[in-house]
Amino acid sequence: MSAVFEGYEKQYCELSANLSKKCSSASLLDGEQKKQKISEIQSGLDTAEALIRKMDLEARGLQPNIKAVLLVKLREYKSDLNNLKSEVKRIASTNLDQAARDDLLEAGMADTLAVSANQRDRLLMSTERLNNSSNRIRESRKVMLETEELGVSLLHDLHQQRQSLLHANNTMHGVDDNISRSKKIIGNISRRMDRNKWIIGAIITVLVIAIAVILYFKLSK
Image 1 (tube, rainbow, N blue to C red):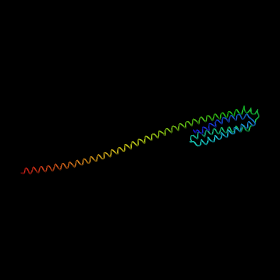
Image 2: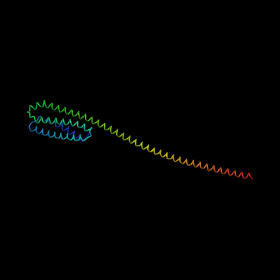
Image 3: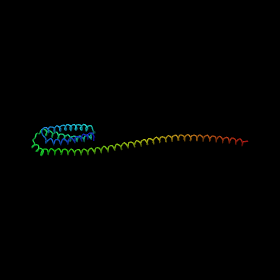
Image 4: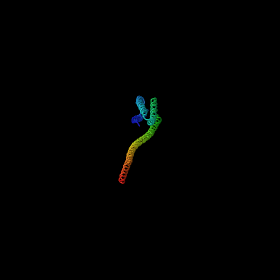
């Protein structure tokens, strides 16, 4: 999750809790004090709205899976802000005397605080669910990265095996060349031996004829 978004989120949650307290105290005031308190709350609402806009811009610039999770959070925060605005309008438009304020404190404010507490509880539950979803997304990304690293390692091993096979193939070609040259040399030697045999045979034949001629002349005398 974006650290920038988390920073805005923390600021908003703190500001929302502070504005809820100010709304509760403003309901008990009147006159100039009430106007001053409402003015402070309005300023805080403007700041809260600016924080939501910043969170929205930050979320829309993130990856789709993370953006979807953060936009769900934003809907909850926008709903919470609208509730605070409605409460401020109600306080600003109400001009009650002390008795009416006491009744409001005993009845209406109790309900308002309960609604606000329930809203914050829902926000906390939603935040917890979204954080769990974010954790699952991070785990999925971790598994994807590990799978990618394994794939790269396998490709590297396959490349090395291919290089080994190419080297072995080149070695085999070299052996074949050597065998071919050896065959040629043996063929040449064989031909020379055959030629030498014919030469020796011819010499022996000539010698035999010469000996026969010499014996013939000797015997004839």
